[in-house]
Figure 1 (spheres, rainbow, N blue to C red):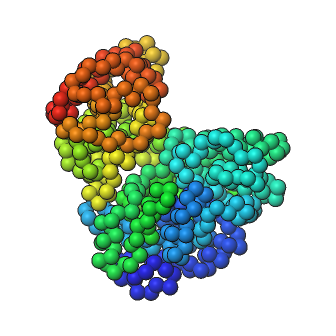
Figure 2: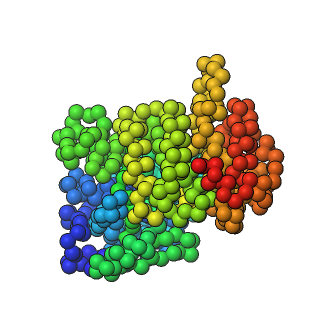
Figure 3: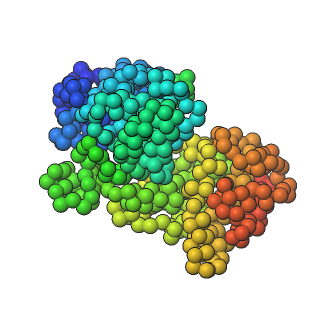
Length: 526
């Protein structure tokens, strides 16, 4: 079996598109409705699959055009040779595997500003979505004019100028990258570029009229797995080559991911949108019959929710600040200290499971119930199904990247509790309320020593914006007393000055324990 449109010998167990792919591509070329920027794995296995659900159900007749503006090798190496198809491989906790040929990408290209502008200027276009990672929204030195646009944000702005000049209607610009208030950041980035070009006040005002919906996305999608490639090869699937580009992107004709999938989108689309389910509208059952068999009619079978901005905020806070991201970070740092190769291996350690369960209980009171997703059920899925999944080869080292920048966001429940106590005039015992969080802070400092719990050298994950204070920890020998006050009082690192809330001394005490000798981390966890 080969991943091409002309393949006809697919074995049972491979789900194929139910729509006319050539007809869809012809309609898309004539009147594009969706441009996606960023051809990464989460787009291919989640966003593209969600749109395929609509195509299969007859709720859409155009596909997605994909543009890759950063890594020029992705499209020619993982799209073009395979007719822009992707084999989506869902790895379930019970060991079963779902294999689906995803064909919702109508076309894919890279590094072609003229074409970007032409597509964005099309009156039929409803949305431009992005998965370019959080770093992709940083605006540094801006190119002198739209003709010289290089970054994805600059190229997007150049396309919007073409749309403005063509008199096309407003549309939605939808970031699907995983950070809070992401739509607001996208708007800020695009406006920064537009203002720097100083073309006209009317163009800037036009950008202001566009929609920048907030979103929350959640699906663990590690790099292509050699083990999955072997399984597919044994099945007779021939296209299993995994490629690392010169920019260190790992791509393959297939993408492996977990089954859980959540995409919560603020429903703000001035020029129309895909027919994903919308919460709270009585017409949904008639418009979207695929929702009738789901537990919550606000969610399509593909895991997409359409809702309002406040609900997106709450869903994002639930995930990022309590039920997933902070627990992932705790496992990553602890797992590296203890030498575990994967997150699923960490979940076999009773001490670590107890630690993240306790941490979740400490963090949950600070988040609000989003209504569309139950936090308790979401957390239970994370702890009993998602993290323990042995078929998701996610390494602690990947999750531990940029930890110093993640802590103030992922553990912001501490600051929320501090602010609430100040508003109410309370003086809570933070040591009693946050014992697991305090231990994690100590373990993070212990990790920064660059020595694992056995005493061997530990290769730390990249953390390019590391606070200078943390560098003093690297290479510190076991048992050496060190002044932690500059670190633990750093509000940019922990969200609060830990000494002002009574946690500084506790973390000092815990750090002394976990850094006393080889085996001290395990002893403290016990």
